[in-house]
Amino acid sequence: MIHSVIGTAGHIDHGKSALVRALTGIDPDRLEEEKRRGISIDLGFAHLALAPDVQASFIDVPGHERFVKNMLAGVGGIDLVMLVVAADESIKPQTREHFDICRLLGITRGLTVITKADLVDAEILELVQLEVDEFTAGSFLEGAPRLAVSAKTGRGIEELKKTLLGFARQLPKRRTTHAPRLPVDRSFAVKGFGTVVTGTLLTGTIKAEQELEIYPSGKLARVRGVQVHGKAAQQAVAGQRTAVNLAGVEHGDLHRGMVLSLPGLYAPTKVLDCSISLLPSAKALKHRAPVHFHAGTAEIEAEVRMASRTALQPGESGYARIVLREPALLLPGDRFILRKFSPVVTIAGGVVLDAAPPRRAHPDRWAVLAGDALAPKLALYLKESRWGLSFQQLAGRTGVPLGEVQQVLKPAGAVVLDEQRWALDGGAWQGLQESIRKLLAAYHKQNPLQPGLSKEEVRSRELPGAPPFLLEALLKASPGVVGEGELLRLATHKLHLKTDEEDALRKIEGAFASAGLSVPSAAEVLKNSGIDANRARTLLQILLREKRLVKVAEDLLFHPSALTPLRQLLTERKGQRFGVTEFKDWTGVSRKYAIPLLEYFDRERVTRREGDARVIL
Image (cartoon, rainbow, N blue to C red; front, top):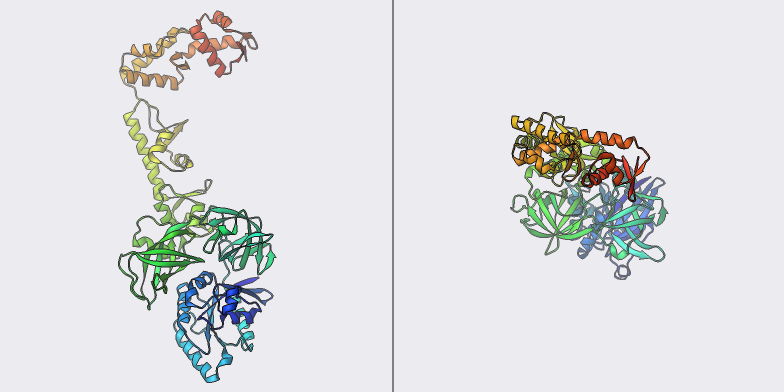
C-alpha cells in the first residue's frame, strides 16, 4: 500500500477547504466557529483512496495570516503541496508567505491548483495562469502541473485526482525501519476510550500494546489502539495520518508540539546548531534576535546566535545556534521555520545539524554536520565524547537506525565494543591505554616493593565517570598490562629488593617460623627487622601476598609450617565434636591463640561451630 500526505497552501478564502471537500467528500472544517465564520482556523483532515493500492491523506491549512502558526503545524509532514490560487483574486499575500514556507521546509513536490474557475471567463483565467507561472518560476513548482478546477461545478476534479495519483506512485518510500516519530497536532478525550492523539507518522511504525514516551515531558504511555483514517488498524506506518489511543496519561498531559517515540531513545534539547536561509524579502537577521521557532507541530520562542556574531543579510545562508525557551525533540535533518517576533511574519527557514552541540563549536564542525555522509558525523561525535557513546546514543544523536549506525562505526575509525554495544574514538582508545601504562610505570618507580595499583585507583585517576566496563575492555586490549585480582601492574614489573631488605625479609619470616604456634606480635617482629618501619611493613605485605605468612587474626600471623601440622591433626579427627578445652589439650596452645585459630579453621571450612562446640569437617 502506498501512503501519501498532501497539504494545501494558499491565501484565505481561495477555496482550499472546498477543494478538499470536492476531492474526498469530507468537510475538513471541524470546528463550530469555522462553520459559522466560513473560514478555516485550525488544521483540517480528510482522506481518499486514489486507487486500490494508493491512500492519500489531506491536511487542509488555514489561510488567514493570523493562523499561519496553525498552518505550520500541519505542513511539516506532507509529501507534496497543492498551492491553491483563486481565479478571481490571483496571487495574494498569504499565497506568497505559504509558498515561502513550503520552499524553506524543503518541499520538492507539488502542483498549482487554480480554484473558482467557474467565476471568471477564459481570458481572466489565462491571465491568472500566466501570473502563476511567473510566480513559481525558478522554484520546485516551475514546470509542475497547473490545473484549473471548480469545487462548485466539479470541473477538473477528476483530472486532479489522476494527477495526485501519479505523484503518489512516484513518492520515495518513508523510513519505516527508523524509530517511530509522531508529532502531536491534536489531543482530546473520547468517552469510553480515554486519551487520543493524532498526527502524521513521520517514520517507523506504531502498534497496539507498544510503550511510547511523550517527548519532551518524559511520561510513558501504552498504546491501547491505533486508527488510520477513522478505522481500527493493527499498526500505523510512516506516511499515514494516525490516531493513537493512549493508556496511562490524561489528554491534558499532551499538547500540540509534543512527539511520541520509543522510550529513552532520544534526548530533548533546548540548543540547536543549524543551517539557516534568510528570505530575500526579510530584513537582516541580527545576532541574538528573538524569533518564533516552528518545527514539526511545535512553536517555541527562541533566540538566534549567529556563528560569526554578525547579521545574516537578506537572501543569505549561514550557520547559527538557536536557543529554545522550552525543550523539544529535534533530530539532525529536521527542518524548521523562523518567524519574526514583531510583526509576526516568516523570515527564514533551516535545517537542524546537531541537537546536542558542545558549548563552543567551530565552523568546521558545522560543515561536517551539514554533509550527507554519516561516517564523518559519527567520528565527530565520538571524538567529542571522552568515554565514547552507546550505539543507542549515536542512533539518538543522528536519527539513524541502530543497524545503520553499527555498519558505519568501523569505517568511521571507531573502536567498537560489540558486547557492550559501545564505541570510542580510535585515538581516544589508544590514548587511554597509554595513560594507564604511564600511570603504572610511575607507580612502580615510586613504589618498587608494591606489586601493583588497584583497579579502583586506576579507574578513579584515569577514567572518572566512565562506564564500569570500559576499564576491563581496555585491559583486555593492553597486552603490556597484567591484572592479578584487583591489582594491575606492567608485565615488566619485578620486585627488586635491596640487600638490607632481603636480610630483613628473611629475618621477619624466620621469626614467625621459629615461633611455631606461640607467635610474637607483628609490631615486635618489624621493630627488630633492622630497617625502617615503612619498608618493614611493605616486606610483611609481600610475605602475606606470597603466602609465606598467614594472617589468622588482626596482629596475629603464623608461618604455614606451624599451621600445616595443625590442619593435619584436625583432619585425622574428621567428624569428631570438640570444645576449646580439647583443642588446647591437643595443641598445647593457650586460649589467647586457641580462639583465633579455631575461628580461622572455621573460615577455612576445616571446622564448623555448633553452639559452644565444633565439628571437624
